[in-house]
Image (tube, rainbow, N blue to C red):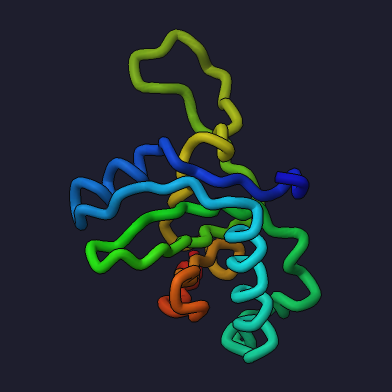
Length: 142
C-alpha cells in the first residue's frame, strides 16, 4: 500500500475475534478493492456523516492512521472495517517486567482499540460488495 499511514490487517487478534464471535472469515483485498473502500469513505465524508466532529474530517483526513480489517460475512458480503486514529499509542511496561520503558504500539500488526479518546478515534464499516457504508462510531470524550 502506498500510503504510509494505512495498513490492511488480516492476521490480527481482531481478525481472530471476528471469526470466533461472528464466524467472519478474513480475505485479502486487492488494490482495486482498497480503492473502492477509499472511494466509499470519501463518499461518507462528502455526505457529511462526520460533520459532528470538532475537527472536520475533510480537512484532517490525511492526518489519521487507518487500519483496514477485511472480512467476509456469512451472507458472502465482502466488508472492510476502517479503524482510524490520530496518534499511535504508547504502552506501559508489562506487569512483572523489569523494564520501565514504555513502547510504541505496533499499529501495523495490532488492532488499535481505546476507551474514550474522542474524535481522535473512529470506525466505519464499508461494504465492497454493496458499495455502501454504515456503523460510524466515534469514541466518547475522555
